[in-house]
Each structure stands twice: as structure tokens, then as C-alpha cells.
Image (cartoon, rainbow, N blue to C red; front, side, top):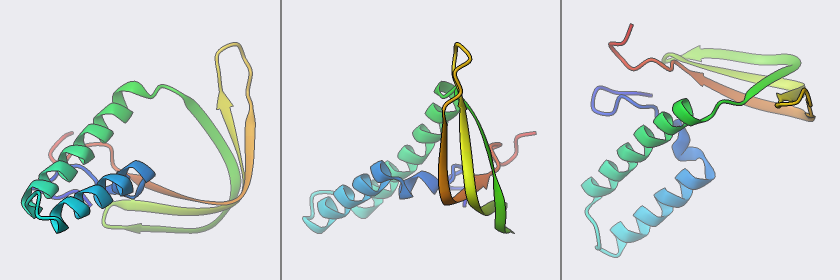
Length: 117
């Protein structure tokens, strides 16, 4: 969840690159090479940069269709569990490849920063 100290969601820390960063920072802290406060600043910068890069650079379109199994709304975050999902990717030239999976979890957060209209 976004906080006044860190207005960006910590969602991407659970990605593979976020987990690798967290593991590396934990190792550096345990070896006494950096302070825990510096590690927190690095993670906050990671949160900010990943959010900004994804919003500015990613321009792909995707549609999906499936059966909604479960949904939740807690602390301004939507979570959807969907079964039998088909994703369709829109590409230039009209080609629309698709991918199917048994189930997926989608976590959706407000893209506006606190205080933005």
C-alpha cells in the first residue's frame, strides 16, 4: 500500500527483479556493508522508478476473458482470481496471438498518487 512516506505501491517488490534486489540488499545488510535505512531508500527508489517506467514506456494492449472466481477490495487494492483465462495481445499489423491459462491472480491499484485529481 502507498503511504505518505512512500507514495508508490510496493507491488513490484514481489516481481522476480524486486525479489532479487531485496535478497541482495539483505545480504549487504547482514554483511554490515550498508545500513538498513539505506536499503529502505533503495527499495523506495525502486518502487518509484518501476512505476514511472511502466506508465511511460509500456504501450502494449491486452484483452482477456475468463470466469471470475473471487474478487476483493481492501485498502484501495482490487484482487481478482480468474479461471480459464484467454489473453489476446494486440500487435501492429493486425496479428492477435493468444495465450490460455487455468487460473490467474490480478492485483489492481489506483494509478493516481495521493492528492492527485
